[in-house]
Length: 420
Image 1 (tube, helix red, strand yellow):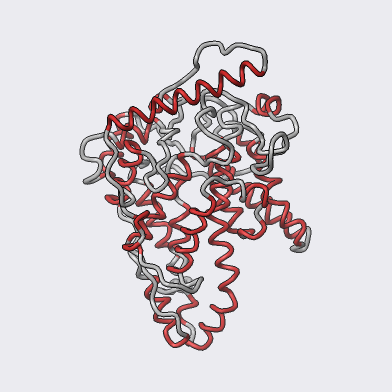
Image 2 (image 1 turned 90 degrees about the vertical axis):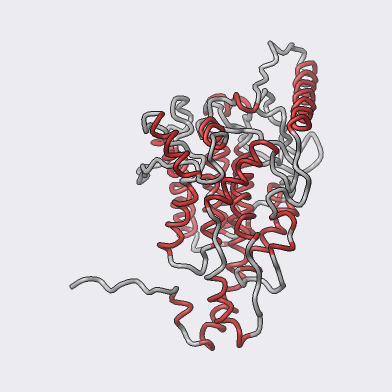
């Protein structure tokens, strides 16, 4: 006998209006907390992972012997300082990287065409159906946002496009990318021998999962794959086996491969589920899991920010925003801005009261409601950033009574062979 076909709508939407309303009211707070947990947890993993990105596990242990990190508090107790090099010097503790920028481009693409509906009990089932019909990001819109990011940075916050990887940089700069990105990405993949399978699309995908909260799982997978193919078309997948040791995360020849990032997230989620089961859901244990597991992950080095960005989204969604470590989340740069977008998303999904219309939110515009930045102005910004990084490294060197051996500076398109 064949198995029954999956329902065409989520089970919640097939219930009577009265039952649906009761269930929604009961689940609303938890879902609200977990949606915020996905977005903030990912940004936290990214920010903490920057401490050890590109380091080996041995170098990470030498640089941060305590194995503890904080993003809050006055010196010398916090924030934990970076081990300074040309990669970390342009940033401050609490900054997220290109990983979160790109995820937020997808979120803003979704929010731009989103709006809330009615909020009365009689309208709730109709509202759920409207939420299911909110337009999802298109390849062309995401491609345009990526090109703006590459040339002008993250416009809502006017931060610089640091960490641009080889694959994204090449594909985005190619002719025809904005009009029809997937064939351009496929052409690059084929020209490179179909060997390129980096992690740059996985790190940005989690907002799509949340945006598809009221949709069928199959639809969520389909849109995630479609948006991935804006830049990354390699079809390879992996079923992670074993633990973090088996992934060899600091293997320099393969640190950017997608299976390492996917494996990191799946392994950490499994570990979190086991710890929660062992503690029978204890609140104290729940409050420690995110920091413990994320720290263990990033101390293994490699592409630590990307691995922890993806893992942080899974852990944040499982545990919820409310139990993320305060001394991390309250030291996150642009915390209030990020939370405002999480709240907007929750309003659109019907998890929070209030009205939202993406057309009225300038941050969701391609240029965030601002004039485009000219190439000359961007070159000036790069120069200022480079000078500030030089000075920071020089001051640190003097404080350590040693000299900097060469500048070590790499331009944004000359990152440390990050393949994304």
